[in-house]
Picture (tube, rainbow, N blue to C red):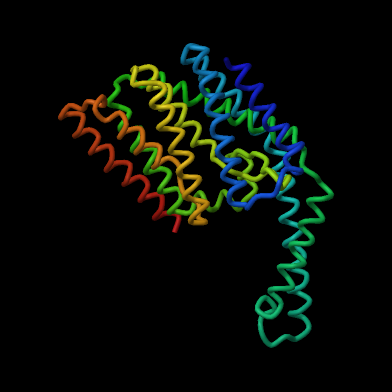
Length: 309
């Protein structure tokens, strides 16, 4: 199953990248939604393919560790390329600002020449980008490495969950971590830095020829955790696959509609817990433990946020 899943992923990516630019134009929002949906379905098939291997937990961990090293190796050239673009663009703005400052402007140059600085910085960055073109094959390779990483570590964690009720703390961690990451600025810092290449998967847009950043690596990691747990505890594989995939699609649609970045994991956690609540039996002692665990997580996130201010 895994070779079939990987083959379909590669074929769809390659065909879209090659012929998608000649496809009929559609609104950017719709094109982005279509790309995100296809990426989600193909990636879920990859996770399913790894799950069908039924390997030992340690093997999944080793696969995840090797994929992490491969992800770092494949993404590093893209990170260096983005750094080069940003450095050259910023230098242009600094030169203009310095020249204006030494010419005796009464107001800060950034206020008087902001539009000119932004335009020239953008043009400089574009010229550097054209000089160092991205390799589509490397973007494809990186996406496969990222999915292997998410699958390996996610299935390793999913196989290690001892009790079905422990899925509730996992859902809590997923929800709070993603909300905290967005609200505390960690996610926003990543998406505007070169490090975005390590954490987000990309897929070509129909009709545009670009390959934008779409969905986070950790989203597929938690998809693998919940999916594997649903198979292990016989919660209903098809039902939970639909629930988990729906969380991706609904989040993508809402993000495009509201034109804002929305975290996937809270939707995923709510869908999964709500869809399996009758089977996630909790004892009174476990409820107390989850409450204490929740307070501990909130305290940790609050402390980190306080130190980062």
